[in-house]
Amino acid sequence: MSSFKPHNNRAWLGVLPVVLIVAFSAVIPLMTVVNYSVQDILDLNTRFFVGFEWYRETLNDPRFLAAFLRQVVFSLTVLMIEIPLGIAVAKSIPKTGRLTPFILILLALPLLIPWNVVATIWQIFARPDIGLLGVGVNALGISYNYTAEPLHAWLTLVAMDVWHWTSLVVLLTFAGLTSIPLPFYQAAELDGANRWQLFTLVELPRLRGVLIIAVLLRLMDSFMIYTEPFVLTGGGPGNATTFLSQHLATMAVGQFDLGPAAAFSVIYFLFILLFCWLFYTTVVKRDES
Amino acid sequence: MNRSSSRWVLATYVVYLLLPLYWLLSMAVSSNADIAGDFSVLPRSPTLANFAEIFSNPVWYQAFGNSLTYVAINSIISLTVAIPAAYAFSRYRFLGDKQLFFWLLTNRMAPPAVFLLPFFQLYSAIGLFDTPFAVALAHCLFTVPLSVWILEGFFSGVPRELDEMAKIDGHSFLYFFFRVFLPINRGAIGVTLFFCFMFSWVELLLARTLSGSTAKPIAVVMTRTVSASGMDWGVLAAAGVLTVLPGALVVWFVRKHLAKGFALGRVS
Image (cartoon, rainbow over the protein chains, first blue to last red):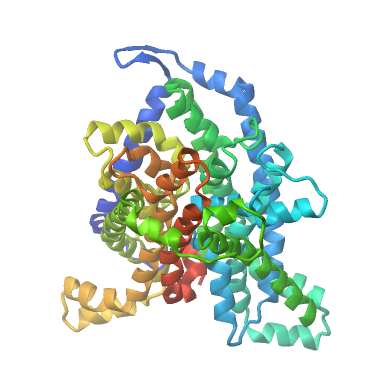
């Protein structure tokens, strides 16, 4: 949001419909969750106030802590692969040329595929009996079976997430690269900068904005990953690929543990709120300055 | 990177991108007997039988219809409420504007799993459970904030002088808004529509929870086929190809704004 805007509280009329509809879909449910998180609900008419009991229980629950740890390791792993790879691919796309629009659309394809279909594609691709990848890797003499081996399942999920989301980093970085004015490159050339210096001293500082957006979007979205592991591995083998959302969904609609699931939801939501605040302060404040 | 090594990076990545897609297509045109039989990199006897199965089986084509219905309802609601709000955010300061803008973002980023339980009860209580309206309204949770943020990014790029000139010319605000402002922003509205469509089309968790037996979306039918009838991989792959098509068909028209849309309008 840029400055130099007149102050006018009548603008509230414009935002009112949005406030109403989002309040209906977000505030009412959120209040329900908070309400449940402090009660023990045996059935609809029998409930007790239990205070912060469920919060204490959730934070001490080894299954929650294990899912949380798996989530953090997974999110950091995919970020550490997707960001550098995305930058490398973006730099390798010619900035002008007849092929460039086609390359960009090709790269955007995985972003346009429904998430459950992404998982289905990888299921078909990686199965050791019918998949190109599964059969291929086994033919190389490496025993590979993602449905039975926890490590293989985890690696398959990482490969799938890289396949699915690196394109987002590529598109953002490419948009950032093309907005760098030509004189910057000419000046660097005059100074005799080599390619590495050109990248670190000219391009990287000007990519800071888009890279912050890319990192935060990937961090938040990977933190709530649900569909892909649900379809590909079902969270297994064992609990090897059960991340936060799936753990929560199992508690809430699988076992109907209303209180603990609600407390879990509130803790989860607070984490996301923290990430959002980081995104907002770095991205929107930068726009204003 | 010099030119040849950068070509190598790009080519390798594109191959990595295309291999799973090739395999999906290959499975989609293979019969189940071929898939279960000896492994072959090329489809042995290409057939369209899997697609024919989808178009003739009501479980499949009704599921496509259900998904398209709630996506359409959701897109209409989202754009209708987001356009005036984005205009207000881009043109005026008002009490609580920054807090409100931030609050919208938190909803775009909130994990759907958090809302699972209350949504289920809320929509059951008001009698919308198992209708396309339940899923469409639930998806507003993230498509409305997404639309406001993207549109605000575009609207802020339109110079304010335009608004003032219309006023000087003696046009009413409504005339200006509908006859001048919206037409010059039709590209932005198209892009926003595309992103509403995309995010509603790809969501599974809420759509799965809020639909029972009649309004079952395509994503749910796909996950159930795997578990129910064993290994109908060919039909599953064909359904996968069909769900990729809508996005692949419209992407050409929004190709210049993809980065901006995915970055919530924060990239020019």
